[in-house]
Image (cartoon, rainbow, N blue to C red; front, side, top):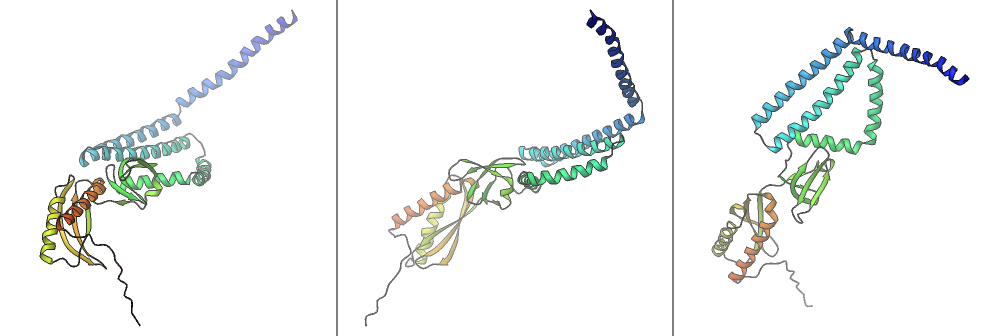
Length: 287
């Protein structure tokens, strides 16, 4: 009976305490929405929204000018995402300052945090920076054939973190961090095909022999043009000639090289020549 009476006495006090807390909170919210701080906050947000809309219009006109393609759209999309993050960051800083928050200490604290994050995620940041550089400078795009170290292949996918390459030798997909692509080499669709000619061959028959090779190379699937570039070097056991082959796709380099080698071998057999190879003559002097 006593506990029931005590609870009945305490309950009105608890209700009154809750009401005392709610009223200042509601008054604070009402005062904020009717104050100049709220109006200035809205103006700042509207200004940044306006800047974002203008930048989107500029990006769309840029895409329309360069031509609508997956590569252009992807590059613009990546850059706009970066710009959006930067705009939101500065908008939050200004909104906090408008509402009386000391952003100086906040920015200093963010600076310390950024240093710590930089050390912890330096590889990730390096990947992003290289990814942005590749996109903006157009070192290569999806569909291009590149060489990175021992890997040569077609770029099938790329983002700010990694690039995926289809290996020209195995057709397997190799994933590389963008920080490893700073020394990437863009493979040309031009192929310099070197092959040997015996020293004892005559000039006229050599020219005819090479012309036959060139004509057959032009028939290979993926070859746009082939041209005899003549004698290049006098080697120990052979003369080295060059045929310049223009391919429609640099990814076919290995297939076309194999086909051209096979053509040369067949032509040697038809001619009755032996393919030159390095030889060592040993002369023994008798006393």
